[in-house]
Length: 263
Image 1 (cartoon, rainbow, N blue to C red):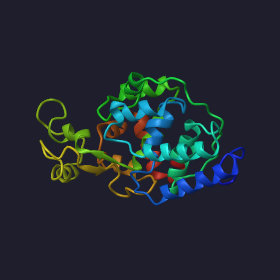
Image 2 (image 1 turned 60 degrees about the vertical axis):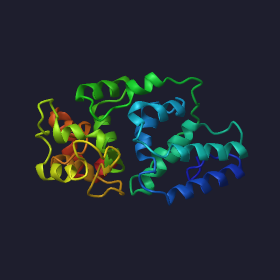
Image 3 (image 1 turned 120 degrees about the vertical axis):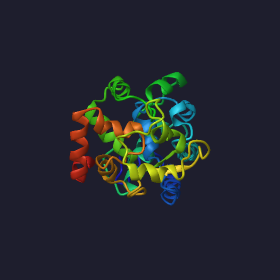
Image 4 (image 1 turned 90 degrees about the vertical axis):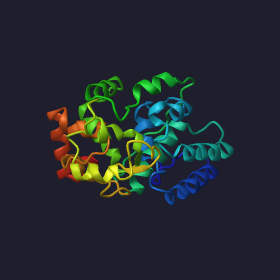
């Protein structure tokens, strides 16, 4: 791989195309950058499934953005270097690595040469991509199914340092967490009150909220600090400190040490 992250065997015109489209992405909205796409796409498909099923899967509906960027890069490269660069490699470069760096996060080498799958499974995407209301055990089981462990679970959850979620993703925490008409007692009361002003019992379904309200456009460890302050937005965030001592300790470590999180 070249120093700029573009595969050396890509034709010269293709390299220019990749850089040009990627430069446009740099000026895009933070939510459009593919940090969360990386979580939903790159991780859960092992960089090999068809991108289309990921776009249509239930956990990604009204959630992840940036698919059009990947499509644009792929189309541009196909015009210059047909059948050379896979969507999986584009995901690894543009979505997972570059979007993280552009938001102030760490950089890393990306091995290339992935091949795209010839098949895709919408049901597989629905079953494997974590949903905001999944239990801790369900999420951990999904990670293990992808050969990821509990450390990966906490570290990859840190991608929620960037991005938004809609009111519908966490409304039950504000009004009816356990089916008894009461709010989630693990959620900071003042934070919950702020959320209710824009996420009522009914209406406002599409209203967006930052997953990390402290530094929503920066890839840092504020997400973990928010969790320790009982200000995680999604139930799938909060359970990292309420359902497992192991994950809670990892959250504490990442909250105290940015470099450890970046490793």
